[in-house]
Image 1: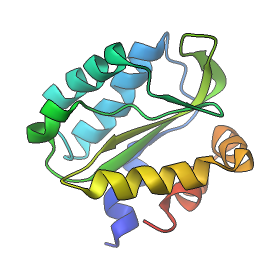
Image 2: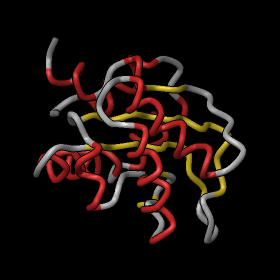
Image 3: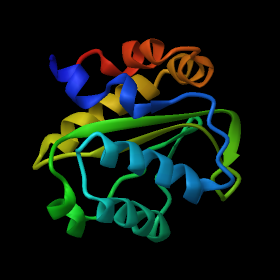
Image 4: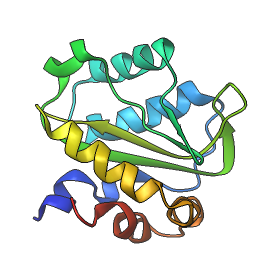
Length: 147
C-alpha cells in the first residue's frame, strides 16, 4: 500500500452527501477517520470543538475540519477524509462549502498535509472538479498526488 492509500482511500470518501448542517458534515468527515483507524471517536468531538472556536472554512467552497491541539493524543495515524456536498452546505457567515477535507495528522505531518491541500485548493478549478467528481478515484487523483 502506498502513502496515498494510507492517507486518502476510497473508504474515506463520501460522494453526494446531503448533511443537514455543518455539524453533521463534520461528524461525517470525522467518522470516516474513525472507521479507517486514524483517530479515536473522541477526536470527532474535538473537531466539533475546533469549529466552535473558529471556522475551518478556508475559502473557495472548502472547509478543513480538524481537531484542537489537545486532541493529539486521539490521533493514531495521519489520514484525510473527504465529504463532497455538490449541492452546497451553509457553513455560516455567508460561506457555502462543497468539499470538506477532514484531517488528522501525527506530529508535524499536519503541516505537510495542510500545505498540500492549500496548494490543490488554491486552484478553483480543482475545487470545482472535486465538487462535481463522480467517483472516489477522481477525488484521490486530485488530492492524493504529491502526498
